[in-house]
Length: 51
Ligand SMILES: Cc1cc2nc3c(=O)[nH]c(=O)nc-3n(C[C@H](O)[C@H](O)[C@H](O)COP(=O)(O)OP(=O)(O)OC[C@H]3O[C@@H](n4cnc5c(N)ncnc54)[C@H](O)[C@@H]3O)c2cc1C
Image 1 (cartoon, protein in one colour):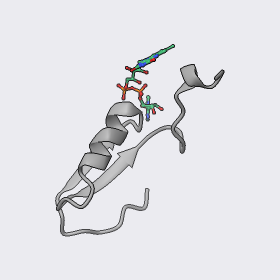
Image 2 (image 1 turned 120 degrees about the horizontal axis):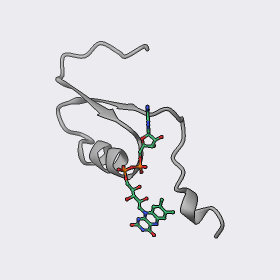
Image 3 (image 1 turned 180 degrees about the vertical axis):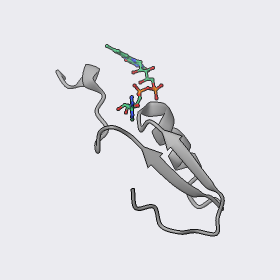
């Protein structure tokens, strides 16, 4: 992984589902380096796909 160096405290969010995305959004513009990890590079709410 190529995580940029930062002097800010790093918060690693494991999982970019509903909880992880909400946490990452809540931390936006806060004095942390937020690293969001997910096994996929996209967010999909599968129950809504059929609609
Ligand atoms: C069929 C169905 C219908 C639903 N309908 C509704 C609804 O109508 N309204 C509602 O409010 N809720 C609904 N829910 C519930 C809602 O989807 C969950 O409560 C919510 O997604 C849980 O959020 P989460 O962040 O904990 O998990 P998730 O949203 O599942 O996110 C988990 C993330 O972790 C990632 N991940 C998992 N394992 C790894 C790994 N080993 N390494 C890296 N990344 C990993 C996944 O890729 C995923 O992005 C439904 C759920 C299901 C299954």
